[in-house]
Amino acid sequence: MYSTKGDISVKALSEKVYWSSRQINRYFNDRFGLSVKNYCSILRFRASFEHIKEGKLFPQQNFADQSHFIREVKKRSGVSPKELKRNQNGRFIQFSALGLG
Image (cartoon, rainbow, N blue to C red; front, side, top):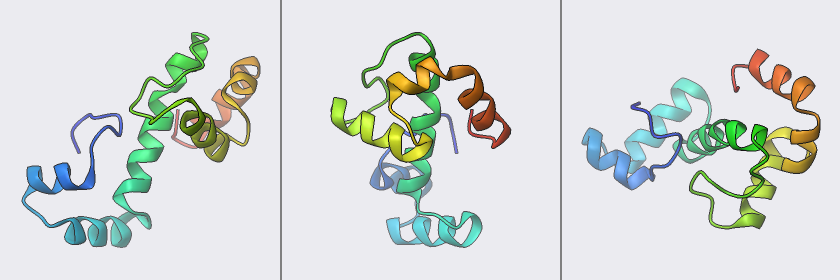
């Protein structure tokens, strides 16, 4: 997939690759074990690392609002963006080792 940092909807993606949303989701579930929406969510989370490292603890990557951003970071990392910033060396190394950072 081209570089969107997760900022693309399933509908927009389906229009670009000429597959239906159902076909794309089926393909992603078969190949990767997750939906396109979940995959894009991971990409947005990963793209937010640079902003968090810089101390920008507000949404930058197509998050609906501040609370959505905080929930997503907590879901993916287990801590708030503020805590992730404070602990960036250990946490960012862990995410990098997992291929997420």
